[in-house]
Length: 211
Image (cartoon, rainbow, N blue to C red; front, side, top):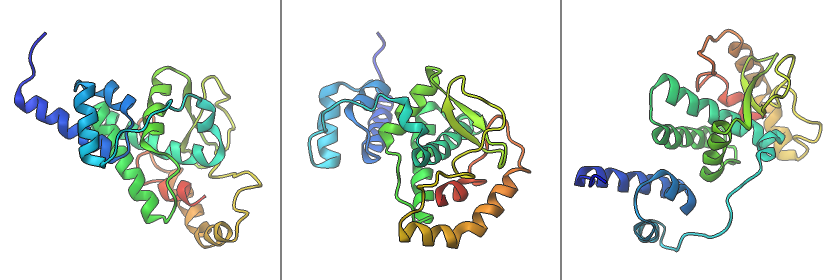
């Protein structure tokens, strides 16, 4: 086994710090990095000031198909795919940069983030395991998350057709009323955007987060 150089070890530590700051759990750190568990625990305590939380990771793919989670998860995964496939980022860079972009979109849209980093990481693993797929919306042409082998034709996404229970609170109803013109305009523009198997970030993120 070859010994890592000091530069490589430092890069691993910086990656670990970035993941910890974004909220990564120990299971994520141990899977993605080559740093020992003891060092990761010490590093976690230095960065967060507390011991890493215990417990199981999310294990159900069904969560990503519920309407609000589906909208947020679809936004993140399209961003992740763009960074990985079009910008040629590594998996880990695409994960961290994609999640930061997702948080920025939530902040600018004044929306509460639904997806934490652990769920974002688990989502990528579900795609790698062929449990989930991207399904094109027949209205906006954006690609949204669905179960593997679900119907691919004449499917409407949750951003274009939210469930009847969505937006029942006064705050949500007011936000939806104010942002509806933007939603229609962005989704219309998405129909004329050409991409390679994915919708590029910046095209429909405002629409999906405003739903």
